[in-house]
Image (cartoon, helix red, strand yellow):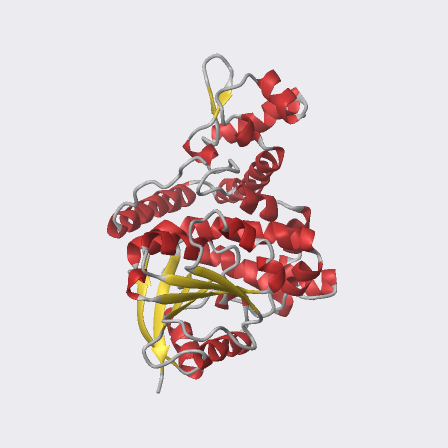
Length: 366
């Protein structure tokens, strides 16, 4: 498997670079005629679909062993050569892939992330967000804004998570996409927080277990439990057999709305609460609290919505929650603190990371 785990720069440096980048982009928009600036922003939707097409066609995988001429690449992936040239012309102009002087295409640092076999692969993410299913929902964003409600029940007859459970062809693409997102945050999370202080960590809604597996590999004295719905973890035992964690990592199934495994020293809720309304998130938190004792810690890993007016990933994902979930949202630190307090917790601290996520640490109130 190809490696894609570069060293993470210091958080203050990353923030300074981000502010500089946002400032340059804002200056460009302010000094460009309004209609031109708006048209440029509209074109980014086309770019997103072009990247999704490259992911679907497997272009990055076909270039993994080295550069290929357009005709050779077109034959390898089974597409029209002229169509491929036109797609690559756009992608290369945004430095996604590279064209050599002899006309051949090759991978660059950005395109590596579209390979299916890298440690941090975004291919599945683009397959989901570029899918016809997902696009059909976002065309109804205005309806979601009008009503304040998900469009899923109207389009699909049920809310998203029920639909994904019933239609596993969508659910499996979604699960793999969420694993892609999870892999982005793993290295920043491990750099920002000492998970080795806990003897047993329970990952609630842990999905394919990528975060907990990485934690246990780095913390040899820690044990782990992955807890999720049966249909989500049904293939996980086979995957874990080659992880080298036999005896240290177990799988339990159930609904986090009802009960979660007891006996953990820390409970992780990663990218869970933002999927749900305050009422439903409160039910999840109370279920987790019932399994905890006074010394146990809750670690919520989610975006904390910033107060600034600059672009931020949370502002995009918040609209994704509006379109596709029943009451889900990205929350501010104050909103998270209120939600925790109402559910029997005390917010201890918020730890930022080099990723968009923060770690919100809390303990039970007694």
